[in-house]
Image (cartoon, rainbow, N blue to C red):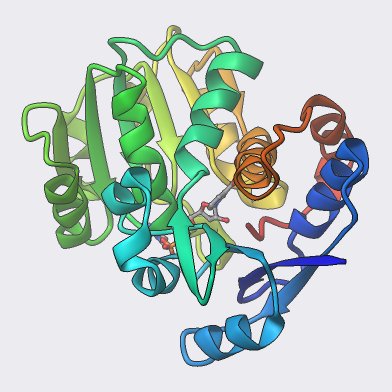
Amino acid sequence: MQRYAVFGSPIGHSQSPRIHAAFAKQCGIAMNYDAIEAGHADFAAKLAASGVRGANVTLPLKEDAFALCMGNASTRAQRAGAANTLIRDGDSWRGDNTDGSGLVRDLTERHGLDLRERRVLLLGAGGAARGVAPALLDAGIHSLYVANRTLARAEALADALGEPGRVHPRSLDDLARLGEFDLLINATSATRGGSLPTLPMALAGRRSAAVDLSYGEAAVPFLAWARAAGCTQALDGLGMLVEQAAESFLLWHGLRPETEAVYAELRARNDGLVTAD
Ligand code: NDP
């Protein structure tokens, strides 16, 4: 039996075991997929001891995972400086980052958004923001404003992306001066223990779409703000969650699973879900 797992902390609420079990059943692949609690101190040891052929990595370990596969990471993982997918390569690991393509696939294919030439605001500069930013640029957006509580992290992300004409780091205090955006993305974990920062209504208008990378209760405040600000679409991160998982599955097994049934099942249970991936 092939073994796979997701590593992170906290990991108890992760939907990844359920998603990958559904994909494996659909594709006729016999495998085990576990959720393994691990932090910075014990991640490498637990990964080595687990005997897995592939792993997903979530908060707070994406940068640790990237460090483990530094010489053998995909271009998109290098641009993100973070890996969410590890593929065993002999005695070492190959790394990739499927968060960005998962988000773009969800927005464009499931929700019909055209990202080309869009003015985009990305709130947050942590692991998730680093993962999605390169894919948004590759999808043809016009410009990306990265606004973060800690300005230095927004600046570091902008530097790593290497497109000074298109990427603009800002602090949250600057939000009132940025004008209206076509797409607003909440990639902060602010509502997972604190509260959403104050967001000026002028950031959004009737042509704007908003997406929170979280789902369940954690997504409620930002999506409520987006609707109040007049956004035509207010989406949560469930679709991205399923699509990034499908992309990881493709990397491990060479097959892209159908995602719609898994997405529909998670959507039906959304109210009881806790953001964990
Ligand atoms: P990180 O811990 O790496 O980054 C957290 C980010 O949130 C930082 O930019 C941090 O700012 C900001 N932040 C935290 N608290 C506050 C606050 N009170 N006010 C303002 N900003 C705040 O987390 P991730 O990037 O990995 O995850 C972010 C979110 O995305 C999580 O909810 C996660 O579950 C979700 N996610 C969803 C995925 C999906 O598939 N749907 C995939 C990956 C993540 P600072 O730098 O100042 O600390």
